[in-house]
Length: 307
Image (cartoon, rainbow, N blue to C red; front, side):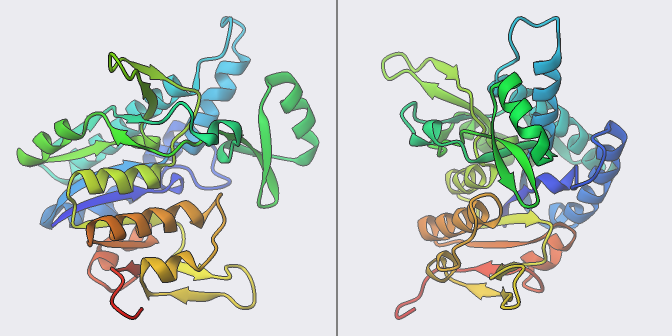
């Protein structure tokens, strides 16, 4: 079975973690332990989030007096792909001796006229207190939105339209390679209609929506979205909280999940299942093997007549 596994941003840095390299290396070991069993039995493509990492690089870039202007988000996204991809590749090499493993910096096509550029919604970087918001907005020109009990920078998140390196990933899989790609949703680029020339844009593409598109283009059998909760909950965090264990895309979309948390994950799972007839699941990172084998998580399956 061909599986595309999308790791949440919590895979390397959890809320409250110091963003030190040693912390991320230790967390990667846990990630690889969860995925190694799947890699033994299946073709595996791994994608990952980069919200904490790209936010950290953006702060460093904005604060660096040696720079005339901060580095654009598309270049910072490429940096995070290389860093996180290296951490994952090394740990996977150690866990899966003899297995071919490749990290591929990946570019994701978006539309220049996507309305998301006028309505930033994607959270990146650390959580700030409300007192810091006016200063950050004034000094760095950021747009900042509420995320739970705190505040975080928000940036445009255009819809992924295609993945430039899909054919390369196909070839690597055909050779038995485990591929790490499309990290952070891929480097967002537009393509010139006449020449096909690629141009980076100031945005971060949602990694779950990119993972769904990648899984579709790779003709994957299963899209596995891994996060920090054991399954999808309706009315999460309220007295009416209820786990969803076996749902269709139609039923999943009725959940009304928030854009900044479960919303993109639910939409990605629904899109993949609708467009391919395959299966998707959402659940906890440390239960990856159990989720694929139907013992944990929320399974999303095709709509049947009458549902």
